[in-house]
Image (cartoon, rainbow, N blue to C red; front, side, top):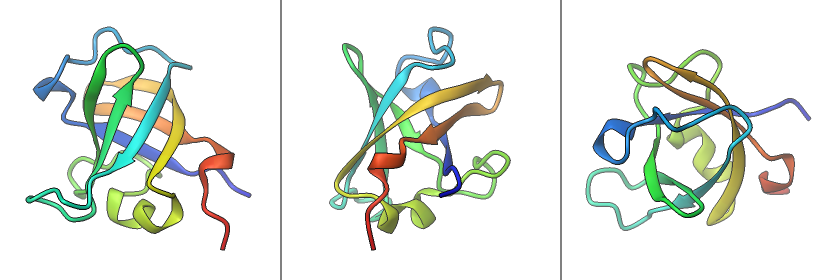
Amino acid sequence: MSEIYFTIAGTNHHHGQEFIEPDMPVKLIKEPDNEVDSEAIKVEMRGIGQIGYVANSPYTVLGESMSAGRLYDKIGDEASGKVLYVLPRGVLCVLDEESVAKE
């Protein structure tokens, strides 16, 4: 299976991204009741809580990342991943292989 990448966006609305480093684990949690985006996936870190959302706009998705809309049906209610790169416009991550829903 090829790796699935996603971008964390909106970190400036939470704790910023200055503390985020490569290899840090992240937890993805679907928010089906989100009033703004029915395919919203929030991103949390242990001990900190929410740090942002999986990007869901062509303006916020970096590189070969999947948008939240494309990723939504590939994971269960929760998934995990890890940080690859911290970039000025977002945090690029990779989904843990065991988080991918079996079809």
